[in-house]
Image (cartoon, rainbow, N blue to C red):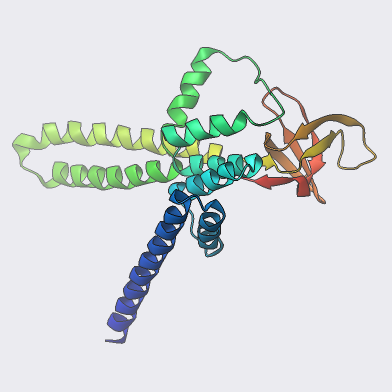
Amino acid sequence: MRRFLLIMSTLLWMTVGAAQTQNEFQAGLAAFQSGDWKSALQQWEQLTLGGESSGALEYNIGNAYFRLGETASAILHYERALRFLPTDEDVIHNLRLANLGTVDRIDPTLRLGIWEVADGARDAHSARQIAVSVIWFSLIAAASVALWLVGPSRLRKSLKRASVATGILLVLLCLWYVWRSSYEAQTRAIVMAEKTDIYSGPSDSSTQLFSLHSGSKVRVYETLSGWLRVGLPDGRDGWMKDSDAEHI
């Protein structure tokens, strides 16, 4: 009886919490639509402080920052939204629009077209979405094997083919999940300082290589005593102060 009450209390708490979160999110939307972008931002950032995180939430926070003219913060939250919604056209469009307001123009190194196609396949879904597919196909594969083993003899040949096909798809999904997860595990950051200098080593006394401005996106390779070793799409790399960037 105690266990039943505990489960019911937990479910009730989750339901109430979800309803409250939805109400706060909708209150932010109402404020945004009325042009009160600061209030909308406060509502949504309260949700993030409470541990909430979703593509829709990050996207709307990015929109609020964009309306307030804070380009770097808008880019940061659009990039976070892409982790949940990697193919969402609105997020991609608004991120491109925000990037037009940055100072730095960093052209990536030339790549063969096949790699662009591969990146598109990798980014077609987020790791979370692929994980759901893996779970479903695992259940389907298990059911197929069970039916193959205990099903009517006249259907076993067909069931065997179905089991093999499902198993192959499951393996491919698992490989896709590992590929996408490894990409998402790479640490990236957005430069938040108006200007930050990039050095050859983790020290102000090192040689200054170049500078970056707010809104630039970098890949983080290493962290050391308040410094980040970062890389750019054009192949340049160096060290910058950790305090000048925020991780995506």
